[in-house]
Image 1: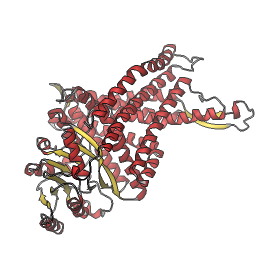
Image 2: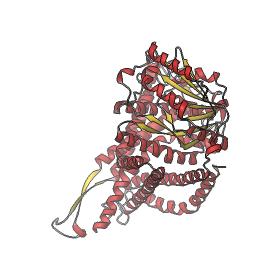
Image 3: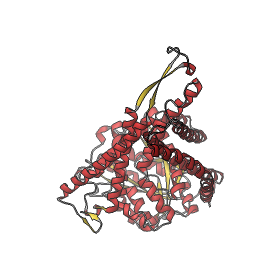
Image 4: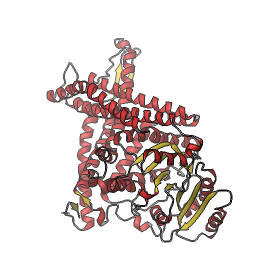
Length: 598
């Protein structure tokens, strides 16, 4: 019932799109095709072949932006309805047993794991019967740390509450997935929550998630995360990034795709659903791999619940942050290639099947849209408005159709910013508001870094190179405590898609080619935006001679951006061919057998 408003909002948005957008699109496409047909500069519209190509690119990104804003409206309405019906007190109380699993790599997390366990046992409210399972692995004996954990387990259960701590050392484990797989069969509780070793969930978050699990009838509820400790400015900035993702972008994505996903930590499952799965020890992101298989093979349902919050620690520095995010990006690419051919045949509704394609395949397209909107459309719209204010030529040597479309895109971006700021104000945290302002102020840099991250990930995945496994060091954890898993290092250096079960099929080859060509277009847009910078001198009031009071403005030639994207697509396809050739040489030959590249 809580998610019925989402469906109503989607129906309303669909009617608006069906009745209102076609005339706008027809008018916009007319200018695009007129420019393509003429191939030369047209004095009336200023459109030639290059500008028409750029106009088509901007039009496509703007339409994607409009679709996202409509989904944001539907997600916002659902959030309002949840807020109105938010339960309190006895309504949140969970009488059934609940299990919490905390996987841990002990050398890295020895200084923080005891504090996390005490927080889970002491501060979680609304749960009558709670058992915390610590499943840890370590490449060497750590007598003092293991003795401390054993002593902590002896304190629970106690006479004060129905809470227990079970500590298990998983012998031979080299991964989080192996730790989880080891403890899952022994759990009898009907609900299972998973937290990382640095997570301190809010007191009511677990009970809130379980209630949402029961109200919606889904199989897994994914909560949100924030940074609870660390350098002040870095904490504010990363908190803002998480807030934008969990409270704005991901709910909008669910409104479009019909599904959330499992993000690993702060995920609450029905035990019967989770125990029917198994985490893949070889996956870089075992949580995303589990989510994909859960929908494709079992048709499980996933929901986002951003109000269920859990605090975590920052990575120890920029180097650790980069390696963490690169592993995430490569993990998403790995899962996409593994399961690309199965999404359309998933045991779920047509909407969710299309949603899976949107979630996994459109990541590269949306990143290109983000660069066009943030780095190009915003700059062009501000300069266009500045030109109107100063009384000069407002188009700044840019065709009117392109300028107006960029202004429309800029307005949509402003709506997104205002909505996010209002959402942050409603959270009541001044630090969060400051962080959101910092986040949007640094958005061009963030978009550029994310673009580089995606391109590096694709290059590594396509060539099969991932490097050694690097444990993410955390803030406030001494560097001497961080040690890489010795027995798992060689396995991590194996080709990412080198196992027989991960041979590339026809669909995976198509997806990889699409991803590399799209990333090439993104790289071409970045280079084109840099090379297309030129200086425009604007006379005061549009006519004052001799340069008196004239202003100088740097603008971007969209034609160079468009041609840069075309060249980037060609280079991306070249990289794809070279990557396949390298895989062929490494494997001693390749052929397509039963739809798979071997």
